[in-house]
Image (cartoon, rainbow, N blue to C red; front, side):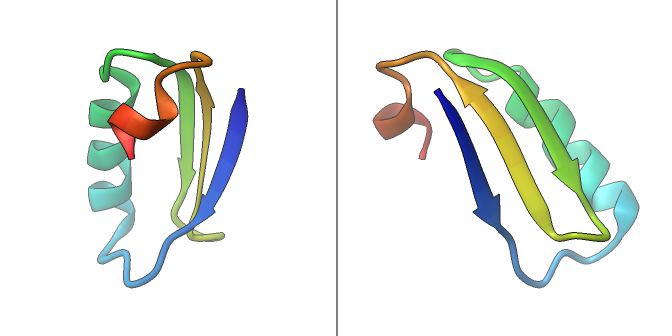
Length: 54
């Protein structure tokens, strides 16, 4: 299941990269991409994982 989230107040591109790296390691996350410029997080989650991750 693919989801996209609008983020606010990202401090810098390095912070966004760290967040993306950690999100990718969460159980139930198939893939993740965080765009600092667009302030958008796109994730591909396993079907049952959304409630646990959010």
